[in-house]
Length: 487
Image 1 (cartoon, helix red, strand yellow):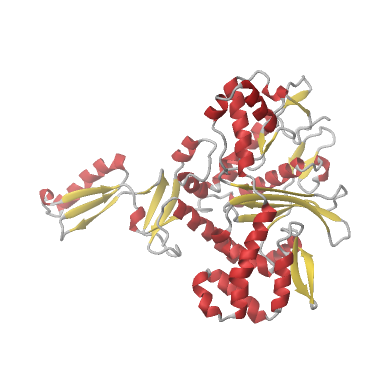
Image 2 (cartoon, rainbow, N blue to C red; image 1 turned 120 degrees about the horizontal axis):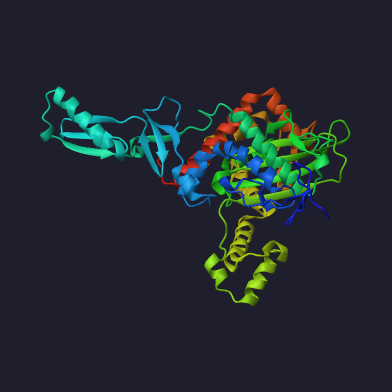
């Protein structure tokens, strides 16, 4: 069966003729943010190279998390040297709320927070001068400080000079996210559209069925992304999801993870819609409308990947295998002879290793969600529902406790009804597709994308509050794993 590039429309081939194009190993979630899933079935080398230029603007959005996760050894970067060279901007704050202006503006690189501009302070009691500057500028800056002290009639010989090129210990570190990125919203949307398109194609959806995302030129066969595609944020709508999302970073063994889901559902017009749910770093959660009048077969495809892989054989271990064992490894990796043609033994082992690494990072989303929701039910909901809430405050985050108190005050659900929701919501058939809610005295399943869109349109402040909480959770997780002060 022929495969086509979804951008130029030409036939894909490993050995292309003049009217064909060469297959491209495309990362559906960019490798720069830890994505492992690849395919050679829907993009050519030329178009893949062109699209990759936009990938950088998208992945740069997540640079603060990439740097700290890489520093903690939890994220395998495409090019570690590039990560090490990455310079982040931010500030040192007096408290971890980061709500006031920073005490000092800083640049963060290779685990150090250096001041944007050098400064100094003098401890007259102990006769010490503290210089805060990058090492390469500290020597010149010291000469400036000494001159200032001489101007103030101070005897330089009486003071001890100490140079600090890391301000992390002076307060709480905060890294800029959207600040300084004028095209932030568009770059984010462009990256989400590309991921949604490619995971849909990977799931077997035809290019022609992505009518709300791709604009196909009938005369040339080429396609471009539409500028008015609908993208909106996910927010938890059911009781289990509200409690789960607030405590997820504490209980989810696969946190932070990337999750992609392509599915079809009935819409209010009586037809079918095709949608994609995208979740990056267990934090950035969005729906993308792929087609609002979908005529194809029903789709329900999910991909879940944690950032760090389970143990896989090293390239050296693979190279040490005899030919029969190496042949078994090739078959287990499902690598074709054509794909390996002309490659050296070292290159073949590298390909096997990459397949093992990608497979080692995938996890069973259904089992994970069911397990986590059982924990939420037993450890949070039932104790809170049956005893005084105050006794459990220390076990929960403030946002979780507030969410639960609001739900109790609404008196919308009985305890038995919530237990029923807990039994249904974690099912794979419902995950991010249907929310179990109470309407007109009955528990019913409602479209999750529809509920999220309604909230986004009517109460955007609620969406902002939720995204702020999720962002803070991921930031604190990354800081702690990298050994940065957070509290």
